[in-house]
Amino acid sequence: MISFFTRRLLHSVLLLWGVLTLTFGALHIAPGDPFDLMISPETPPEYLEAMRELYGLDAPLHQQYWRWINGVVRGDLGLSLRLQRPVRDVLADALPYTLLLSSLSMLVHFLVGTVLGVVSAARRASKLDRTATIVSVAIYSLPVFWFALMMQLLFSYLLRWFPSGGVGDVPFGWDNLGPWFLSMARHLFLPVLVLGTAGAASVARFMRASVIDALHQDYVRTAYGKGLPERLVVWKHVFRNASIPLITLVGLSFPFLLSGSIVVETIFSWPGLGRVMVEAIQARDYPVILASTMLTGSLVVLGSLIADVSYALVDPRIRAR
Amino acid sequence: MKTTSTSGAWVAAIRRDRKATFGAVILSIFLLVAIFGPLIAGDPQALVGVPLQPPSSEHWLGTTGQGQDVLRQLVAGTRVSLAIGFAVGLCVVGVGAIVGVAAGFFGRSVDAVLSLLFNVFLVIPGLPLAIVIAAYLPSGPFTLGLVLVATGWAWNARVIRAQTLTQRKRDFVAAAVVAGESNIRIITREILPTMTSLLVAQVISSTVYAIGAQVGLEFLGLGDVSAITWGTNLYWAQNDSALLTEAWWTFAPTGLCVALVGFGLAMLNSGFDEITNPRLQLERAWRSHLLGLGIAPSRSTPVTVGHE
Image 1 (cartoon, rainbow over the protein chains, first blue to last red):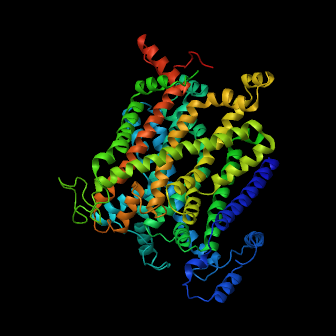
Image 2 (cartoon, chains in turn brown, orange):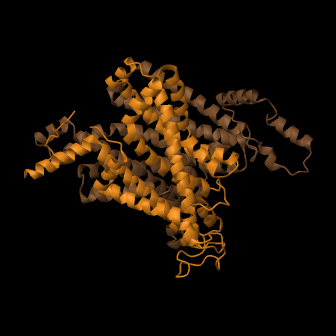
Image 3 (cartoon, rainbow over the protein chains, first blue to last red):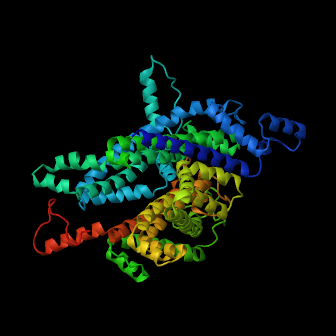
């Protein structure tokens, strides 16, 4: 057990190092640096040199790499070139918004997806199953951003039920908790709807396959044979066993949610990591791009680590391997 | 259960399954539009009238914010978007197969290095990486394809590695090794053919990914905005604030096309699954056998015929 965790932990550290190196490489091998965009032709070359020196861009690549790794370990992510603020603060401001959006969407997509998947597997080839399959395949094939645009068009521009973006201007406070909550909920509704539905479709498909597989096991026939009602067989015997792989899916859907939220945040002007990232890329703000890619990468590593460990806790066969 | 890989058998299999037939029909229509559409539709760049006209008998899908015909642009975009989509789908699976088979077959340090590589690519959320690369390379269809392959291959590699690991332990591979066949020959003649249906399924799902991701990147303005593709059509619609003016016809049809192609491909894939998955096949055969005998299959009916 201990050795399983140690091995898994070491693996995660190795993965994180890979993520750091890859993002550093991808950014620095490409030609040009951020100051090429910021300056006019009249800018004196001495000023440019001074700026490059200030941000450490004049150093040889391996030194920059070393400095970057060193900084990350110490929690120092550098200075944003565009905002003139520590990158750590920029990310710390954005992270809660992304986590709020992602966790709510995840809740929606696992709740809806699981129920839909189990029910349509238990009633395989019924009208409900067919409809659910077609709807989930259809939603699965919709591009997320287009779905987001259509929802925005429908609910914000045509019906005017929900705001088209932003987080609202009601400040948080203990005395106006009610209005703040209401405003947040109104602003969150569309992004969560879009991210949640898109994910629910794939969870439903996965769950359906997993339940169909479990329905073929001997213990299910035994349960039916001894006369248990179907509801009990499906939700107690089948569901419990079929949902073990779901734990892995929770870990694996992290990258999807974070990628998806880049687009959704951009469309709904939600001030999370995704929007920070897109803005940083447009301005070639190296430190912010590096740090936010690293942060999303780390969240994914962490997600799959937690998934693996809980998988091992739930299913003793995994630990033995 | 052996699956034949000749094209005749595939066509027959598609025709047997209703879902697969449906998917194939949708896809064929789009392919016909992609090949012949641009010859019939006319110049997509031509300014044909007042900007942002709603659909009419003259312009079936209305006009864009620049005053071009939406339908013409849609047709022209179909060709480019599908071409990139299918090419990337093939390349993604190709790269994934090479890396996955190599990792699974050679094992040890090769496996360790390659596994770390595709795990890193799996961990970095694809879109940010794609955005980073796309932002720094000259824009064009080639760059876009490269970016999509770079961010899409890892998942396939992981699945194929796992599949290779199980095949590697089978007797027929051991027999080939003893017979002194070269590694390349064992991989291409013994191992890869057992994965034909998996590879086909991967090409289909990778194409769905490629089309969606391509349109997404172009929508964010990271493609070649002067080209006419589904993604750039959406980009210009957004730029001309079609949403604010409620000009739904400038982006609804394009998104619907992306969704339809994805839907068709997914239907084709789930049809293949019903065809190539022995368990589903057996169950169907057994059920129809029972029904033929006048027995209603129930939950406690075991599936036994030909079970492994």
